[in-house]
Image 1: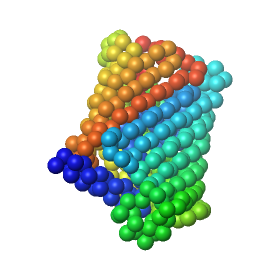
Image 2 (image 1 turned 135 degrees about the horizontal axis):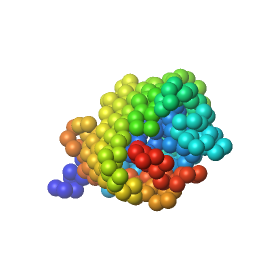
Image 3 (image 1 turned 180 degrees about the vertical axis):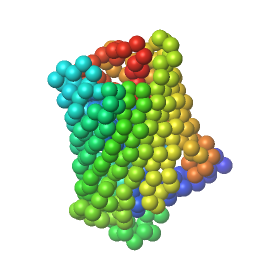
Image 4 (image 1 turned 45 degrees about the horizontal axis):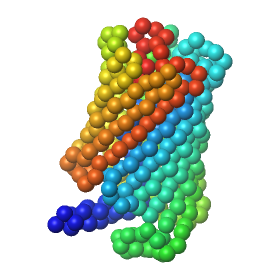
Length: 320
């Protein structure tokens, strides 16, 4: 009986991924607050110059389930020139982001180069504007197609072979930032995938709108509270709304919980060293259309290039 349910769940998962592949897959990152600039180029360099990465194994134990690998580098030119407070004083930043995502018969590699410029509004507020160029390569392995894929007139023709598709597009974003809070709006694929080469086995590439926000506060010298929210909407895909709440203890480790509303819940933890922060997140499904067997493991790492994980002011909070 257990084997029957496993096969049934696997079939449903593969069918869901097949449906998503036709209208562009949704990439989940539960620790979204550590990778703000990927979702919004306007937030490039908001935390200074850093190298970031994560590995996400979604629905572990199910063959063909999504797996994601990400690495990025951000360079704040104000910090590079020795500004005392680059988060406030720096004016320009650049980032390079690479994400590889595999799901079923598909492997997608995305490269984004982003630039952000900042305008100082008040003594403590910045308006950040950013834009990025996105290049995506999607590879289809015809040997890994499911029975559902074979019934699709577009995908079925690639049985037993390999095919590649390339998409070039643009991302934009703006953000209002402060040392304690931020709110931002970004858009991925502004052109709707208009520049395509290779075999067109994905039907559409609609634009995606992303709203992010966060607030953090030092409650005492040894305890800080950090809250982040994320909302993403895209045509033909269910809206995605996520919330994360963390507490940072003694500026050295954090504990937290999060939710993808109506889909999943997560618990998270991490540590800070002199320049490195490492995090682990365990996510499990709850109700709704995400209720499939298998859990998700997400590992994150952020390395500061020029500054230590130490407070520069008494009330500063070191992470988002």
